[in-house]
Image (cartoon, rainbow, N blue to C red):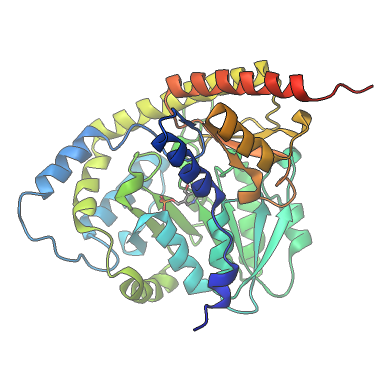
Length: 398
Ligand SMILES: Cc1ncc(COP(=O)(O)O)c(C=O)c1O
């Protein structure tokens, strides 16, 4: 029997493989510091946990409509209005099983054989797989620290062809943690819209992005491009990774298609999770999430200071997602070997650039600072020892 081309050629997600290797070391009794997975250690806000307990009172928990609980769609629209100052019709919001399914629906609804999709290199690996799974052609645009590893109008224009069907952007980005300047994002969207191409903007880290100097939250792309397809999630800002809950805001013309596809792909997102997620938008829960955002900023400083002391360069300072993309080329090891050796000898799990990039695949590694301060300090101390052992074993230039 045969496997499809897409199944055979899907790249593994190396972060998870390193995570499994870390778990095997732990099973052997080692304490591993896991800085490889983008998962905050806080869990859901207390009111959400309480609401989940309430939902488990024995009542039947049937499927919800394919696009999700109307009350949750309205609550998300309210969040966009109150926090980001944009009006979104709840009818345009689809509740999904994490941002992952939102990306799946968005790609399934917009991409087919012959379509080109422009994506930055480096970027979140699943996006690339989604595009190729649906027969699309990936147009991977190498970026540099000069544009904070994000696309800009000039690079999108240069990559444009008559077959370009969509531009996919994550802001803030995984693996670099950087936000694309809003004017640049708006200009890219303008360009794509003028050419009749889709704009798929992954904003799952948006609410973790630094506010501006006046305290105004980082703006959503919807403020500039109300017809963009926007991906959101309860995983990161709300600390609900395992709950598998996210959303897509889609233009009106896509609603019916996305509803049909959602019915076929997953019927509905988890019913108890949706009920509980309503409690994520209370002032009390939002205050908890803001407190946690500030804690992540403190962790970012801890990590950046620690890496500077270790002389490990971080070419772009993150301003949103909880990642630093470290250039390890000075160590003399390629990024993959660096991650392998850091895990095997120092028991620190990191993610090699190969997961995200071509251009920086061998030179960069991603560190997630979503771990506790204690783990981050321990991880940095171990990396320091690892680097000094490495230096001892590296022959000095003659
Ligand atoms: C940029 C980006 N998009 C989407 C996802 C998937 O998130 P979710 O847990 O909501 O499926 C991730 C997860 O790390 C991510 O980094």
